Image (cartoon, rainbow, N blue to C red):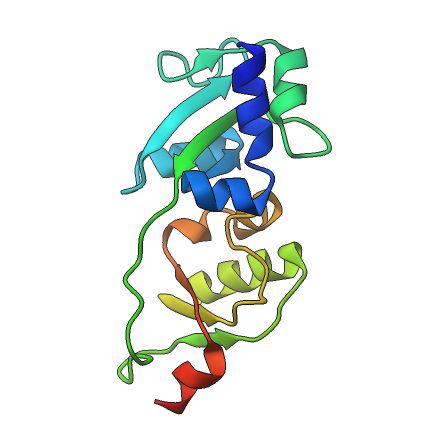
Length: 162
């Protein structure tokens, strides 16, 4: 793994870089396995020797520590393309949706997304000051639910008036 690759992966911890590149980071063998079975495109997978064999670039434990966004590095990390969801003009009247205003804590947002998935909620509408759903902490806290729940950011007050 080159220094440039390490720098690039680490840069995705910053929202501006995630938005500019339209990428996010997912860590852990289980989550990456779910992404591999989903509609999302993976740009690159990095893993320790023996993990996700044949699908990942093998990295050393030291390299994994350098690119990981977690306190304790996982055995694998994927760089994934952000899904593009068309935001509806108004909330669907025929199914349950959530509106979130100003949820700042990434762990809380991830938990809300996970619970929404559990209850069959397909869309969450967020105010623009809500935490980024592709923040590595949010992605981790969703435990894969980010693959099934569409999260939309918009001027929430205007959207709810319709």
